[in-house]
Length: 422
Image (cartoon, rainbow, N blue to C red; front, side, top):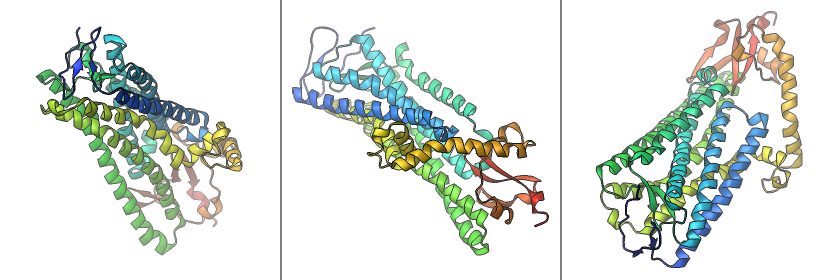
């Protein structure tokens, strides 16, 4: 299959030996873009590898919600390692040197890992939405096994949108300065335009709408919970309600980190999206090779945002990195004392969990893991309540054994019979 010809746009395209042309631009343009993409590749590869390493080594970070973060790091890592070296090498040669099949494989990897990252960000936003607005339901629904099943679906969905160009629906062709490849969004034919529009709808616009929807309701839930604490908790001095609110605030901190990652990702891909939509509208003649190449580089740079943001804003991630990669502790401003306490935390927590497990033999299998409560005596002197959908629920009237606190996938359980004899 021959690659479709690309129309020259405001710069002279000259043929060379082989099937791939070059763009007549100054050499320093290729070298500048090559240098930038090399820095992006090294940063993205090392940074995302550290994210994967930290989350896999640290038991305290191995929760269902964090599995989605690991998947985002994996897709960004693969994006960096498959795109940047090839792009950099071609920039040195000032043309595509890996042949037609290499172009198709390169573009396929870029599409697959880029779509996977976008859909994973949508899943992270929806997960934060359920954890904050429907905490009890999210604990019952989400587990590591179900999180892995969701991720299998994410990869299959991404694969389904990356394969059509191999079968004649659009095509993978050189773009911009002709040193990288992408799907053909420049050719003005019904088939190519249909693929471009459906691709943007189902892998960019719809996920973006889902993300916006999730965070609108997250903001609303936090606002209502804050109002409940001010009017109910503070007025009546109810410590348990305030504790539940603080747990929600902690979830909100994680949601804010995810929101920053999502915003940067969307900002990175927006220029590329605009270029593709301009071509879709039939104005490809106004696009220069630079106008195609620079947005592509910015889009590929989205792979470096995840590790940088987690290194700055996620305290447990910083501590985990400092624990398992001590030479980075100084850069992350983590003291040796914090690293030692972090590394000893899982074993002490497992001891506490084991000692409590005998008291909860009547619970179903999914609720066997218990988290320790340091102020159990004070809790027994208060009425267990919980914020659920911004309503206060009295669990004493519901069952003998009640859930009074949620912390990710852990349950704190007390028997209301202990209230007798107070």
